[in-house]
Image (cartoon, rainbow, N blue to C red; front, top):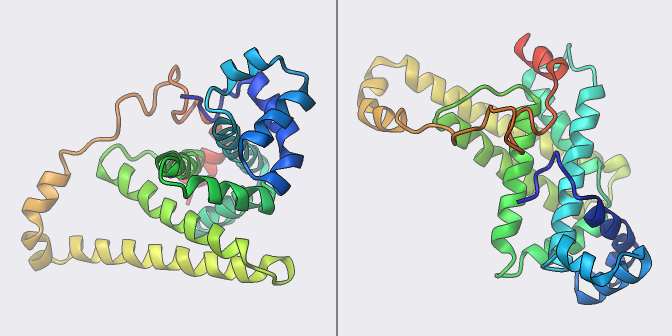
Length: 244
């Protein structure tokens, strides 16, 4: 599986050549053929780099957006931001890193039954990249719930953005802020349950079971692509997060 941090140079060359065709033809076989012709990559090599054709190119385009977001976060000064604002800023940077019409075509592709699992995985990886870039250190069930919740926020915000004609996408930014507020309200409610003796006793057994769930092995190893260090989360961003 290609990681966000380690793109394949041949595949990236094909993606760049495909973009002008995607707007008109979508992520289909014709686009892949055009990308091979325009890029000058030998067809046999192209098939090795992207064995599933345009599906692999669409996935690579998505991962490129993740890398652009991470780079933008590394350059951003978020030292004065509240944590909820850092999340919202990261999501917006991710959206701003890609072309809207290309994303629209990608949504069409990944809504197809045989491509839907790939689309879900890509969104999960985006959420994972955001949390890692913001210095997340969870290693229990919260590792999963944070990424699942942010995946839902990201997906709904992208769908809203695709139909947004407001100036500077102000309506999308307001929509994103509301979704982040919903998430923070949920986290506040969870904290309230933990602090309530009666409710915490009621949920003691479920919490004990959930406490046995751990993050996937290797999520913080330096030699595993797609892990915290593999997604290029640097000390600058992590320090900004831990100080708030």
